[in-house]
Amino acid sequence: MNKFIDYSRVVRVPEQGLSIAEENSQEIGNDYPLKSRIKNILIPEFVIKKRLQAMARQIASDYKKTKQLYLAPVLKGAFVFAADLGREIVRCGGPEIRIDFYETETYGTEIKKEGEEKRPVNIIRRPDIKGDSEIILLDDICDTVQTVTTILSDAQDSLGIDRSRIRICFLLEKILKNPFPDVKQLKERLRPDYIGFEVPDVWVAGYGIDAGEDFRLLSCIVSVKERYYL
Ligand code: IMP
Ligand code: MG
Image (cartoon, rainbow, N blue to C red; front, side):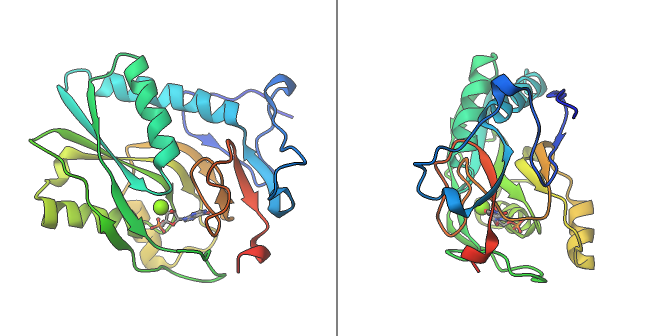
């Protein structure tokens, strides 16, 4: 069992979850009401924190010369990630940061069905971004790339923000088992600038991310028993 994790690069997470040293491992208490719907703990809270610290150092260094950086998290899934990453960037001496939100909806109270290709993404809210600041779009998961593709064209068309000012940061990138050819092509064309973890093609939740609105405030990232949400 390899318990060493290199936090300075993207961490790949297996389907059974990361194995880490005992003192950092995490259990879900029996009093957690949704415990029976959880398959595995994929990423313990401690590991998320360590990886975010490394990502924040990278971002602070990349934007050393920037006067003002806008974080544009995508609600709701990225709200916990954005709060933690943003504060880490400040802690390690990054640029002045502003934050405002996109809000989109894709799945509502559902989850992705087996063999489903992609769903339209509705934009519910746009951020108010002043001046010509640099922007990092923060999202929870890169799955079929529809959300980020929709937002990038919206930022250009509705907010007049040039693509060159925007970098893309995902907490998780899903490694798709059988991507549809156009999704595969889109994914290859649109490479994110920052990725926290690579996760398997299963439904994940926790740390801001939901399964049918469940699990958003769980501190770690888990895989869920999908039959409860189909
Ligand atoms: P996209 O397919 O890359 O556009 O991802 C759409 C959105 O679906 C993501 O921003 C997530 O909010 C959501 N999503 C995709 N996969 C999962 C998952 O495994 N759990 C929870 N939400 C997911
Ligand atoms: Mg989302």
